[in-house]
Amino acid sequence: MQQPVNSSDPVIDHINIQDAVVNKLRQMILTGHLKPGDRLRQDELANTFGVSTMPIREALRQLQAEGLVTFRPRRGAIVASLAVSDYEEIYHIREALERLACRWVAEDFDRIPIDQLKLLLEEIETAEANQDDIHRRLQLVREFFFTVFEASEKEHLLRILSNLWDLSQQYRLYFYTFPELDSQRLTNYRNIYQACQDRDPEALISAFRVIWTVREDTLIPLVREKENENQTT
Image (cartoon, rainbow, N blue to C red; front, side, top):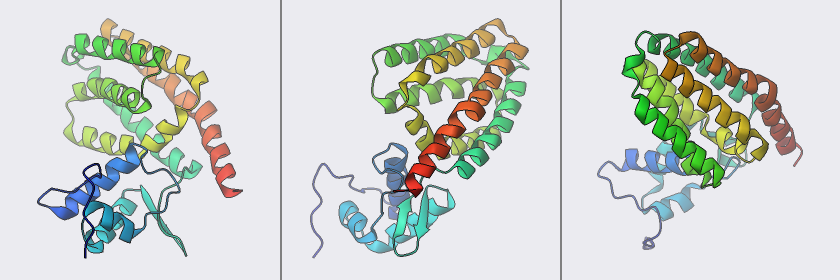
């Protein structure tokens, strides 16, 4: 007999059970509720969501295709761990697409809602100063960047970039455990805002170039260190 689900559990109440399970599991991974390396036992998840194991199995396969879940011999499905090769691939693609987005944005800076961008920057600065919940800070940063990207008005580009940001969410969560990076991040966001306010294409690319350089010089070594740590434990 199926066990009743506690009201505090992430109950699935959507008509399309398959999509609902995928969305809920994806959310749990991207918000850090399920962490890299966590085992994903189908029977436990089915009991938690109040569904059979079939939609759980199919959801795990879909999330595997998205790069959020991997299958290991004798361990089954687990949340994908941080890996340098994956990080480099995701971010090199992101860099190319972000460069393209900046080029299209620069064609008409009037498409950027500069007041909204300024408000988001101020919210980020306040959240960082108060050391607010990491997930709120990450969400604000995402909204800030996509306020710029959306000015490109390129639907396909935005959809692909959004997927890549989802794939990089676990890495971003990890980087936020290093407070020494906070100051550099804020400087980068301020530079992006200033470039947009000044309608300066070169300054916008320059601000993003600093971010891309930090990824190569600082963030990749951090991921490599974490990957090596996981391999020895």
